[in-house]
Image (cartoon, rainbow, N blue to C red):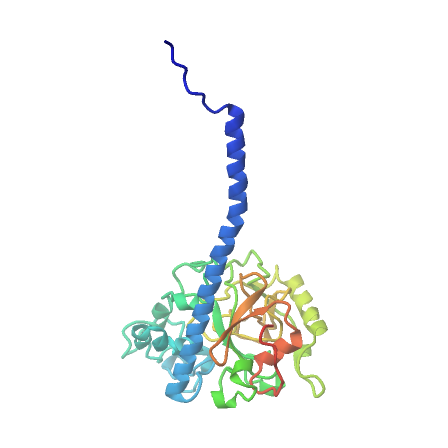
Length: 351
């Protein structure tokens, strides 16, 4: 007796099955991507938590916080203390993030960017700075290695408050945050309260391209910022004033900009180891500074927190807690959170 072969799938049935699988994959992929970003955001939060606790341990040891640019004395810059050539506040907490051996290689007797070796050092500062430290990097920013093997990179830095200046400026240039360039501060001087004051924030890595302008990471040069300085009747710049300089930065950006944000964790200066709170996170305009010949973020300007997270950026507060601050946060509230001694009443834990 002749046996009948089992019936197979028809072409139409196969196409229907493939179409169903495609729809399911299309529905699942966004969920997978969202889960991955949630994991990356949690890792970023953990990094900031560890950095915040490290500054607390540093403070417990030295009874003060490190300055934004630690002064040095070396033959290359004469006998004067010269903080422009010095080291970042990220450098000073290396022993507290399990990088003691790296810290021990730095003798602080040469400029942070030099390749020379001065006794008793056995390696150059620039060699040390090429080490990439995971705690200094946000996993949501996929530009790892954008600067090649030349430097260790960073997405995090300390808060300079609403001070637009790179120098001593202080009240003349805005209210300082928990850190400033050359003066030591301590937790006792944070009269606004540690839980109300931003200690650390994040930004996006630059694209390391002088030909391509990325408004989400690069910053424009030669933008006048005098109008952002406080007056006797106005403590912080208004949204209108910020929009004016932001528009100028957008116009100037393609022809005059820097693309080195996050270049070196060892270096002082904005977007290497510090940012300010003049503008809200992920400001819709490009970051900017007034200097045209400066190589990195070492001049007056607007350097807001930025991130690759949707809707805001992570911040570590003075008490060591980590807070995700939304892009839509009220400007005045955010500026107040950036200052350490502004005497503002801040009560908005969710932002």
